[in-house]
Image 1 (cartoon, rainbow, N blue to C red):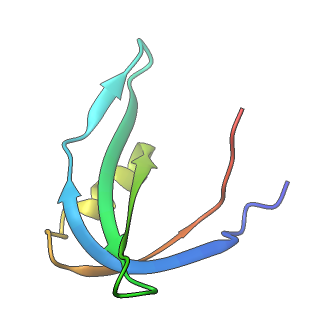
Image 2 (cartoon, rainbow, N blue to C red; image 1 turned 180 degrees about the vertical axis):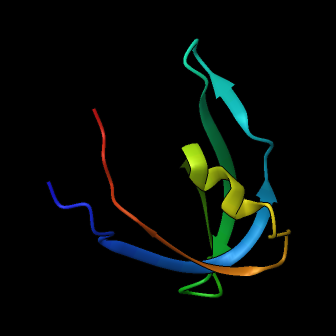
Length: 76
């Protein structure tokens, strides 16, 4: 399985949520919303999440900061 990110989006952070701990094994998840405007007339809003040790990467960011998010689409 390819673990390299295959999609990249640049946008402005709208909100960062607190880290949540799920399950008995302490699995951590932290969600954040961004606004990206490939077409400024119709901005898009997306939610992303970081898991495990990556949750701390959001600690130094705040709403209004511009970020580049690289990700893979996966589902079950």
